[in-house]
Image (tube, rainbow, N blue to C red; front, top):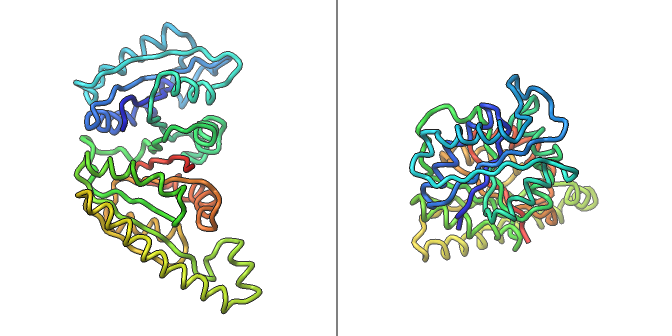
Length: 299
């Protein structure tokens, strides 16, 4: 599934902290690692308190040095340096990810605002929202111990929509490669925690709204049971559960209780539950995520 992994690096030690996990993925999938640096136009002299690479030649020297990282020993590595013209860094990353035929992008979350700045800034926002290649978000401060802990438990949140199901093949492939268990999760809101649209209904008819949400929970159980059966038939260890309440609280609880190592999420922004993902997951969950998160756009 993953044959070429793109790693944009800005020259800082913070950005390089994604390398152990990235090389871990590359080793398992026997993928080529593409180290990529964008030489920005009118770039600042420093970034995160370190010298900012402002010239093509020094960027190439830097990538050569990064390629010698012990964590990436035995992995095929190629390097690419691009000088930004008018298209901007985000478009450059997106375009080169396609041109270089990469099928996964690993982005480091750093800066004063952490992942909030990265995701809502022009770079990651365009890479995700306008691109089709899955993106791994990693907060560098979460990489504290080497070697990387193996992936044994993968959380796969689903909301019942076809778009969210686009994440199933990726999660299944990862589970097979890492001999990991998939934890399926659906969180059905209560009246008190429902998104805006459901909340409007509850004000008109609370009893009808509660009944509708209760039925949704029952349907979610049947839905996850069916997906669990399909995955089990493919030889994948899987468990599932439906929680009621706040989506993010349910997600955080499951990560802690089930010792989750990786989260795989597809987004589309259509269903009521996914509105919660789009509107709250990014600014509230990702900045505090203690594990890598793979985010992809659902069809």
